Amino acid sequence: MTQSDETSASNVVYDIEEKPPLGEAIPLAFQHVLAMVLGNIAVPLIMASAIGLATGETTFLVQMALIVAGVASVIQAYPAGPVGAKLPIMMGTSFAFLGTLQLIADNAGLATIFGAALVGSLLQVFIGANYERFKPLFPPLVNGIVVMLIGLTLIPTGIDYAAGASSGPGAAGYASLMNLGVAALVFLVILALNQFFRGILRIASVFFGILLGYVVAVFLGMVDFAPVAQASWFAVPIPLKFGIAFDPGAIIAISAVYVIVAMETIGNISAIVSETGRNASNSQIRGGLLGDGVMSGIAAIFGAFPNTSFAQNVGLISFTGVASRFIVGIGGVILLVGGFIPKVGAIITTVPDPVLGGGTLILFAQIFTSGLNIIHREVSLTQRNTTIIAAAASLGLGVTFRPELVQNLPQVVQPLMGSGVVMGGFTALILNVLLPQSNPVDNSPETDVAATEVDD
Image (cartoon, rainbow, N blue to C red; front, side, top):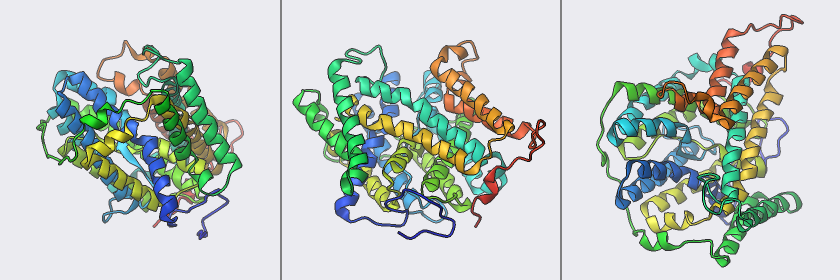
């Protein structure tokens, strides 16, 4: 396996530029798709339900979510000019925007959402194009904290999936013995394959664990094939199907979320490259941010919500050691096929929640360890830095586990302050700017290893 001079010890099985045989690459690509597909379509399903869209319009939103995520993933792996990181980044509809999207939908509707998403995407494009100017705001300390918070705040979602209801504890059948049993089976099979086997069984352990769980779920009567029968055979993207409108308040609200999404993307890119023992280069981060921004703007035109890099797929890379962008490119093609041929996409979406929960729970925790690895490798744990980590974690996890904390804030800021990643990320960013770079107790200099980031 070829590694550059910047490479240190890593557990990579397939490096970024390596191409596994198709017999291995295809199940590894499906593994990536299975890890993110329900998260990708959850936002359009939630928004369609909240707005009261007809079945055909809901289906269209889901199809566009799959198509845009597929194109965006391919572009991140195989850039179009400066757009794309040339890294194994799976893209999908961002949950970070959900609260803000719902607020705008209640007051103005889908056309205003897509208008705000289109204009707001220009901010992320601007940050990406001028990344060197913004780079001091996003040192490894801030990036590592954001990645750790992404993982920690996703764990409750993984638990809900494992319990059989992504909507939460109030759902019927939540934490039934059948649901927990299937989730536990998937979880244990994945762990066993990953730790006690070699070759394809280890690196595709999540795929085989979910496949086994799916087969068991079919025999237990947990799989509903009705969506497959109802889905059409072919779908065509229609630009501006829901119209477009521009509202200054909506644009400002969504633009603020784009800043946080930029922080997530920088953190995810740092985590992916860190798994190979390297430091992310300016061109990789610049291209990744441009990929996020450009594809989110295109998404708004074609009736999809803003896209971003999916953290669970970062966890998958860390867990399996497979960092090949060739595999993510195939995953993007699978999403495209699912979008243009709805019956294929419908089959993927029939995977029950407990099966996905058993497969993704460990991946969410693995995201936390990726962030921890960034901190360990690139940040000196001075009193200043540990204070920033503590403050960001306490506020970020505080609003995650006690969302009632923000219920008396103005409604326009609740979606922002109520997000653990947003709250913790902004806390880390602001404190990193305000706190002195030298420790007043021991007068030791700050030694963040931001300077080790590879320049172009």
